[in-house]
Image 1 (cartoon, rainbow, N blue to C red):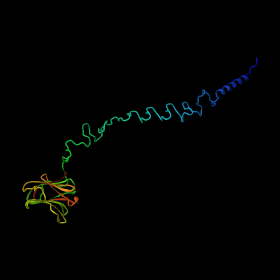
Image 2: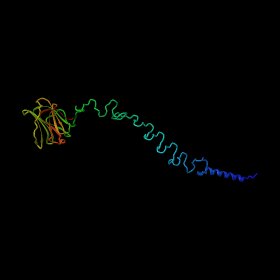
Image 3: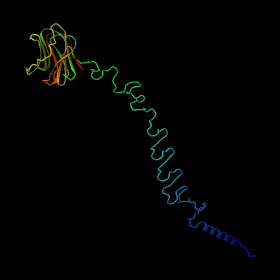
Length: 284
């Protein structure tokens, strides 16, 4: 029997351990800390568990990270092509809660929009006339212009001059040879309307006076509408291109403008043989 020594035993165990370590570490990096199974990585300098193997892509990866090409993803994130989505967001094309279901319907509580059963903006107001039936608002009297009975002669002031849509109305009764209505620009007369009873046949003359000189008279008229002692209503409508004159609501003639300083017409003078029961200037 050979003698066994403690030195030999210790030397044999070390050699066996060295052989096993060499056999287990062939083709692998040496791990001085141990605790790793063959093929498992994770010691310093190596990727952590779940990191893709070489050739599978770059960058770190953690549980739930999407595959390459899928983009970032988190719980509830829509699939590619579906657009962003958050809790309560309606599916594509649907409306937000409370949003009007159809064009033209009102927003809840939005001012200016009609309530249920009310007409939409732009719809005709109930009772308003249809187009061609006349203005939908009553005549507005021009401020600072006197109305009602007046003494003759009298001047009716026009603070802003003449503007389109202005209408002068004179109600009175003829009492003599004739009377006149003059639209005045300083000493000039833009329009002179002069019914004459002293001429036979009676005539309704229109004219203008510039620099003290009268122009050619206009006398043509379908009828002479005035009678001595009988009330009348004379209406002169100011238009951009002419004066339109009616008597007793009957259109008689138009007088084209000869003087175009409309803002300078500051006065309408009434004089002659008549009594005045009412005058007014309105916008129509």
